[in-house]
Every structure is written in structure tokens, then in C-alpha cells.
Length: 71
Image (cartoon, rainbow, N blue to C red; front, top):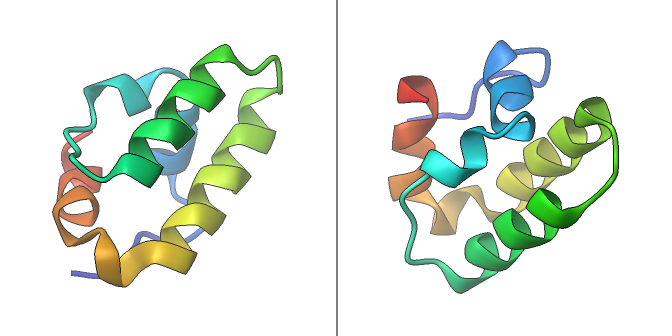
């Protein structure tokens, strides 16, 4: 399964609270979720950061990538 394009609405949904619904056992992803939940950054900046994270770690996040279209 491949990642949605950067302009996809899924990244905005994740940045606006959707990350809390992502089921993951990946420690790095758990840390990203917690940091972004506490971050005062605007949702657009968070969405870009989430997208870049998934691009970098896509091969290690097959379970998480499969969940993206369901969030």
C-alpha cells in the first residue's frame, strides 16, 4: 500500500486530532503523536511534518500506512 499524496485530506485530519486514533506499536510514531498533540504549531505545519515522517519511515510503518485511509 502506498502513501496518499501530500495534498490529501488525510494529512489534515491526522494533524487535527486524528493521530490519536492511529493504532501503532512503533515507538517513534508514538513519540511523534505525543509531541504533536502538545505542539502549538498550526495544523498545516503538523500535516507537513506527519507527511514527511511517513515518507521517511514508510517501509517500517506498513500497519500504520494501511490505517491512513480509514482515519
